[in-house]
Length: 437
Image (cartoon, rainbow, N blue to C red):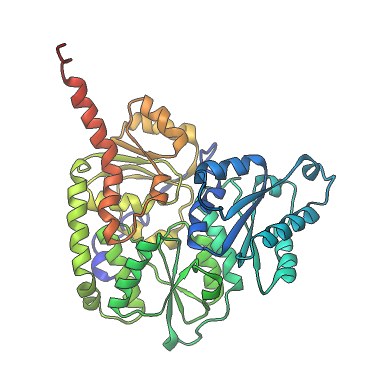
């Protein structure tokens, strides 16, 4: 982050007290992340080792794929597996062999742990090593946990990417061989926009984790610089740092300001002058500012309350307060990773309550007392709060919708303004006298 952004609000919320919450929580399962991860890796297959409930969850979240065979499935643990009457490892090997025989296009196979597989202590890491020895080099088998026990749904991506890092080859060693790794799954069109701007700034060697195909795996080492595009990748960042990579600290690229600060931080890490960045981003930045200003007309002066759900809450609160003129009442997040969120915390003006973790009953009491104009929460809380007269925005929609970088900044603001415009329109409609027959 360049000096001019750091001076914008001093320390912001860096040193603000954090309300720690440890109680009942309402979150989606980490298996949900497969829905967007499988699109980024066309040669990969996600095999969830779990129950019929896991299969129903994935099918419901992803929709019924009629015209294309999906690249995820569930190896269902039956009663005999759960009771220990069958060798779960032998059953898993059989399922994998049948899958790979039927799908020779698979190059990466993820064994995804679930609540049931973790409860019976099924060691998928050992299974992955055993199956890799059998099927390599044609197929690389890896494992990670997508369990919903004490986690939130975006952490499935974090555990998946972190599991991929140890198998990456050695990368650049010296400072003169610096390469950029961008960690986090993005829609293809957004990734292309990012690469285009990085190239204009002068950064040509850009690797994205997850890589689209197994054949395009890249190396990681002391010459690697890591920039995150998702704030929930704490374990992935730690795994890359253990391999020698260095973190490029920056706000998340949400909105015109956050995106500009993100590019400036990367340029600084590569020794590129800030005026080069300003020239490269001038046109898309101006478009983003105009789009945000138009969409934010319904947001200025309104209050917003974040329930902890996706771990996007802090950078989104920064975007809404600084670029859209909203007032944040409470910013709750499942986990406040200060290394990852330092840039966003510095730009988030003091005032809102920062909370980490969840005690849903206490937080419901606070949102009812505050009566914010907009409440950002999970699906399970949205309908009850709407019934109480509160406008809501589903936090999961912010993960499935393209919201990063300049060209999506107006759409991001629009996601928050639409519920308020709808509420305002309904109020106007309710005030109209009934039409005469």
